[in-house]
Length: 497
Image 1: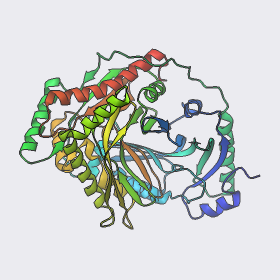
Image 2 (image 1 turned 180 degrees about the vertical axis):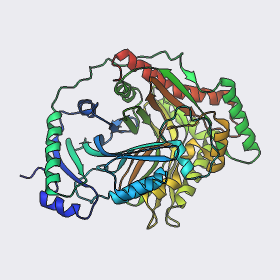
Image 3 (image 1 turned 135 degrees about the vertical axis):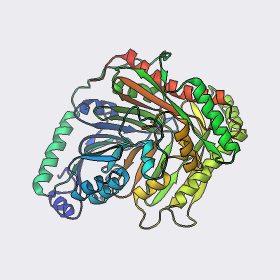
Image 4 (image 1 turned 45 degrees about the vertical axis):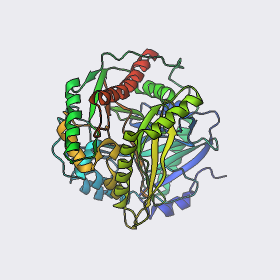
């Protein structure tokens, strides 16, 4: 029986017309977990782990472990570096310094065949686009000081993926092959067999007790309290003057730590399970997060945005929970902010979707997560013929929930109000594939770990009747919850390598 798909002969035929061909096999997964598998393969170059929790209650169908990228894209300050097996046309595009234009060329050159039996993610670009990538989409002022000097974008093209199908209790072990020879197929099979054998190795990370509360009083902010309060007041002045309806000023907090990012991820998935859970080990930095909100998704020619605005805490009993829901639905400030963001999402999708196809469904639906509930709507449209995945990114990036409305003017004001560049915060994390599919979340509730520091940034949506002290408290509470997870992970042991 042939364990691998496609067959050797089919592979050679497919490779003649495609830049990348996946070779894969199934493995029974009833004794495996995503965390255990990731622990076995991490530490040998860039890796990632993607998981999902639906409605804060059950794990999603798919989890993804990626490793051994055959290509990496790194962008910073108008320079794009391609490290690995990049097509010649992509290297030419990279010389122009635009990460989105380079990504567009890469996705076209690295097109993969559409084969039955493959999961939603099996190839393509996986990683992050930082907030400042917007400077390649819109003309904005210079912004704040680039004190962290982080890459604007880091994207991996995984050479191997281990995909969990939790519904069918199976693993798919995928090798993405660039060469189109029979020998390349044989090498991919051998590499996959080595990886399968590794799945039975002992887990290295220790078992952990449930995390407890941690002290984060030593966290440092990138702006004094009075500066943030002043930023909220100045935002309200712009609103009263009619320049904007809403803007989202943010501040960044940091802690000194040498904790293993894998331990932080383990804590986060316990205390804050979310629709988007991710851990990226990128060598000189790690990204750990649990974002509740999609930036944009594209699947089968349909683009979707789910604006989230308005939140309330969860209550211990169903009766109290329902009372909090009723209060959230009746809150005029939350409703007005939500309507603005729905309109913004409709406008963004209208730029790339067929006329009349953009619809709003589940308007102001209440969705529940482990600790909070939110107002959420679904905005969907049919992508016009000829529109690429990168076109969709340009139309929707960054999310209105992290910038404001109107979006461009709000971003200009953010550049004026915030002392430092945002880096990853407010950008997108996830994947874009060569078939035009996208699944990116908004980079919030995310920890960036680099140079012995953990960084967390948080913002608050300011509207006409916002109270500065409350907005400050909102940003602080959001950030401290993440930094507390870092401190809790420290108590569990395990320093980063």
